[in-house]
Amino acid sequence: MPVTRKLAWDEQFQQWRCSGCAWVFEPHALFGDQSLNKYFDVVRRDEEFAAHVCDDYRKDGKA
Ligand SMILES: [Zn+2]
Image (cartoon, rainbow, N blue to C red; front, top):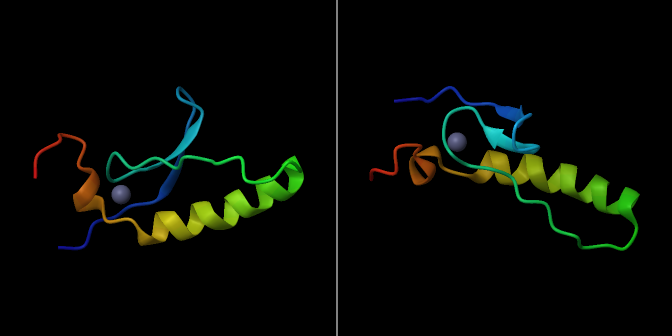
């Protein structure tokens, strides 16, 4: 069964999350240059969001 999901900005926790499950994007400080870091985080965010499986991040914690 297809699950409708999208990348959503969580104002409360100041982080990107999935609208369909409990997945959140965790930024990493890979570069000293923040502008460069920001660029790669955006690319990585989109890739990780596309790659994650909602069933692995269920909000209720049940398998
Ligand atoms: Zn998800």
